[in-house]
Length: 313
Image (cartoon, rainbow, N blue to C red; front, side, top):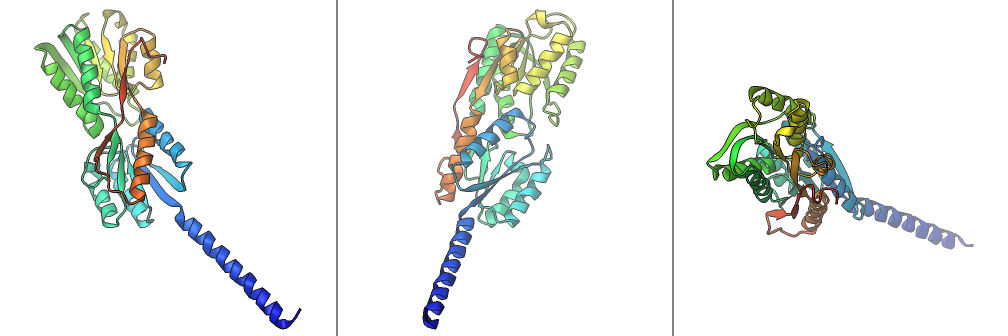
């Protein structure tokens, strides 16, 4: 082999190595970095649609980072800013956008799209993927009104700090307001730092103690399942489950379905399609990353009323 041949061969090898390195680097750059940020990962519903989003992401070239601020809403802002600094390709939030406006503005200034996953509507969000909270609340509130024949005292468990839940309370209030003989005895906002069941039970125990007469409470309407389950525990522990107190929730998580199927006081909930929310959010991220401007600022995923008749399905 001549010197020229050796030199030429080495040049080909060097060129091939450089090409491989370049392709490897471009392949790494092609992987999209997606951040999911929520303070509510302790809630079963949030867990379900985060898991569904992750499942949908497995078929894509995405690096998904789930960040839980463990109930600290203010911390979401700094986590968004961290992701902006890391130059992620998209951010998914599960929090009231009005409470993290500074973080959303930082993302907008950096040209990073933000998608809501059961969050709330905001001009700085590409879209918000959620269930129709207005419809769910109307369905369970009318269920309660029908079951108690439009009269009696109702306890409401609400949570105004989170828009998807806040609107449920507003709608339920409107429904009950159409029945002059229904009185909202109390509006309770439970501590959700541990999921919401324990504090809801404690608050319901106090309401029961303050209203000891049978029939003094006709129903408990809860904006989601955890307070409904806590109220159920309190009613059973107080030995008042035989009074026919009707309980409804929203989400139809496994524990709620089990309670409804048992045929006791917890009679109805609304099943959100958590898997559908996660998958639809992943689809929205895909479209945004492809450069599409989403015209639908809110994307609704269908729901279904759950009673003892279909709780086991």
